[in-house]
Amino acid sequence: MNAYSTLAIAFFTVVSACILRVQISTARRTDRAWVIVNPIEYAPPLGFVREAQLGNIKNRLIGADEKNLFQCSIKNTGNTPARLLEISLSYKLATNQKDIPRRPDYGERSNLNSLVLVKDDSIGYETVLEPRDILTWDETESVRNRKTFLYAYGLVTYKDAFNRKHETRFGYLYHFPQGGDRRKAQFMREELPTPYNTAT
Image 1: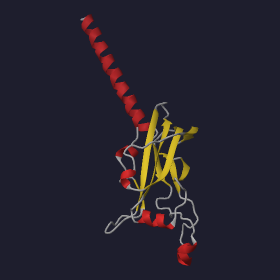
Image 2: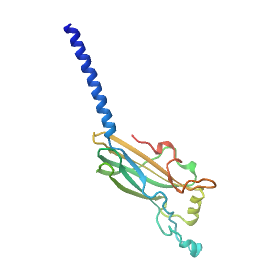
Image 3: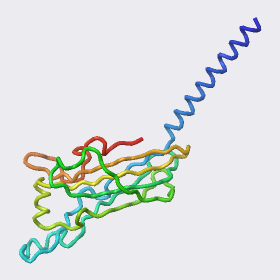
Image 4: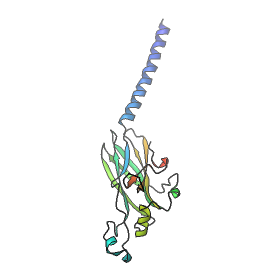
């Protein structure tokens, strides 16, 4: 009887330990930090260089002589603090949608110095358009007509309150509707390949 009692106690101890481990793991998943990245302005004006031949009307358009920036908000939507480690952010002009790589190249990353974001806290970050930060008028028309494409992408790495490392990858293509497309002109995730928008 003592042997059976010892086995039963050992069995229930193991089961209890497994249940506790599952509960801790579930609590950590529930309470962990979740960092998301969204554009601050979903439909910024296209910045173009002022040219004499455009005439007075076009020279008064919003965006004349302005740089093209992608400004984003990095926000913690989780229940516990996040420590931001690194960020990579790019804003590019593609001559064809097929020229956008299936898998993003993030290049060099900038150090965020373990900046702490508590729940619902956020910071801003920005970069300029490559290869030039300002477009010609013809280039803005080409973007509006979906002959060329603007897209922004990047990643943020961070640690949660349980010292586990995570990564948020984000990507947006500036969509300009054509024909019967009833969607608004704005940055959208849907038209970029899946690897641009993943999170761990």
